Each structure stands twice: as C-alpha cells, then as structure tokens.
Length: 397
Image (cartoon, rainbow, N blue to C red; front, side, top):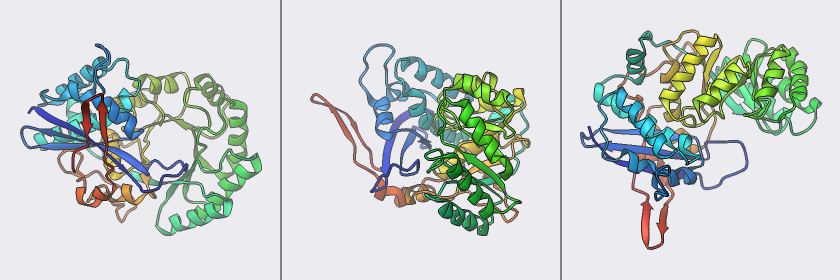
C-alpha cells in the first residue's frame, strides 16, 4: 500500500476554559492509502502547534515536516511502521513537538495495518514480539477532576458510585492550591462518596513542584484514605525528587509518566525515579510502538503499566491495545466525563460490561469508527499561508 494523504483535523468546543480538561479540543489525523484503506489517530497536544509539524516548510535537513516524510511511502507490515517512525523522527530531529504530533499519525498507521491484515492491533503486536495473543479484561477507573469544593467532590463521587464504578481517580482542580487541610478535605470527600470498598486514586496534578518534602507530607496525610496511588505529586522532570520521595517509602505507591514524550523520559522515571506505576499516553509519546516498549520496560522492572487517557474512545482504543495481553496490568484509565466532542468522536465507544470490566474489540485495527457526521460541527477551519504560498488548508471530514 502507498500512503496518498495525511490530513490533520482541528476540532474544538465553542468555549475553552482553563480547567485541566484535555477533551475541550483535539487533533485527529486521517491517513489514506491507494488501497482504499484509511486509518485514524488522535494527538493529546496543542492542535495548532501540531498541525505546523505536519506542514511547516523545510528549514534544513533536520526540519522536514511529517507529510513530506510519509506521503508516497509504503505500508505493508509492522516493520514499515518502525521504519517510518525512524524516518520521521530523523527528518524532524530539530522539531521539539515531533513526538506529540507524530503520535496521531503513528496510531493511524497501525489502524490501517490492522485493517489491511484483518487483525486487531494487539494481535499484530503479539506476533511481532512473541508475547501471548490473549486479551484480558481491564477494570476501568473513572477518571475525573476534583470538584471545586469538597462538597462538589463528594457529589461527583456518589454519582460515580451510583453508575457502578468500582475504581475512581480524582485529580487536578483545587488540589495543592490551598493548604494541607483543604487537600485532605478533598480526598476525604472522594473516599466518603465512593465508600470504603472502591479503589481510589489521587492525581495531584504536579501541584507540589520539586518539593519532595511537601509531596511526602501529603502522602502521609492521605494514608488513612487507603489510596491505590498518589499520581504526579511532582513536576514531570523532577527525577531526583521522585527518587527521594519513593526511597523515603511514603506508604502510598507513586505514579507518574503522562508527561513522557519519549521512551527515554519514561525510562528515567522508572529506573532513576523509582515510581511504582508508569502511566503512558499513546497520544503524547509517539504512538503505540513506543508505548508498547514502555510496557516491556515495566514488565522488566516489575512495576505496573497503566494507560493515561483523558481524551476520546479513539485514544482509549489505542491505549488498550498496548497492554491488553498482560493480565498483571489490571487497571484502565477510562474517560468518565468530558466534552460533547470527546463523547461524540466514535460511533462505537467501549462499553463497561455487566461484570464491570472493559474488553478490547475483536475487530481489525483500532476497532472503533470515527463518527465524522457527529463531530463535523466541531471542525474549525484552518489555513496557513507563507508569503504567497498556501502550505495548509484543512480538508473536509
């Protein structure tokens, strides 16, 4: 198959707020081939910055855009996806946004390959890495923001409990913005709303910066609430501080990794930061293959791999295929709230089965279908001119 087009699509809600809600806009990538097969992927990054990476004029041999690297190329097997990744990253060596931007295209290439081979992506990954080709159900944890107050948080938790969630993560919002008592009140409200039997996680949203002492104090204060983990208490690149925190044995496992845009960043957190849960976003780290490599790293170091997904079920599907064949990785971050855009993006989202688990779709490629009719209202017109030349005009869905 030959790649004949690579089309980015900028979609957004009418109003954007400062809330840590990554579902307010998105960048989709559609790749088409001369065989008639097309694939879709989603980036978790600034859409307009990423679009520039697909079309920016060449500056020199280390700044060549993604479209130039991909269009006209051949895609017939998984080796081609690895080869094309190497080509894209080499050609864009000096483009700092490259991994974030390329994530969508890489996912779309896997979607195409799965459809071409009539296999789900997880099965192709298993074949090429000698891993078991057996998918396992995952327990979804509802991923939501803290309410503005402890009372709001309690109400959100009780509603999620009514919906049947057995695991929930609260994050961002006001945590870390006030004092210790307020942080404790937020976590206490989440625990009381969910009840004692639910698995509860807390995402501090990098609130404690580079202060491992403050992060340790909060972990100690949260001990009574029996958290599964404390997530991102520190800045993404505070590796030494993560090591100080984890080696001090705070009593709560520490999770981090959503900010990793390269395998090396994830390796640094695991090997030198000492974290117990590594959380990877396929829409940030460069797609499915680098995510799978981090999964293998987690297996080697006997820690837990967890997806980071606060987007749509297109992103959820890409994330799930990465680790569905490992039964030891039991938890799935599941977008339980989000914009109308994110909830409309695919026509066949992943349901939670009657037993409370999520199972991968036994369909070729990603297994989900982008609902172009439903999301057309969110499409934003984008055109980029350089001098007298038009270098980008957004295609129609």
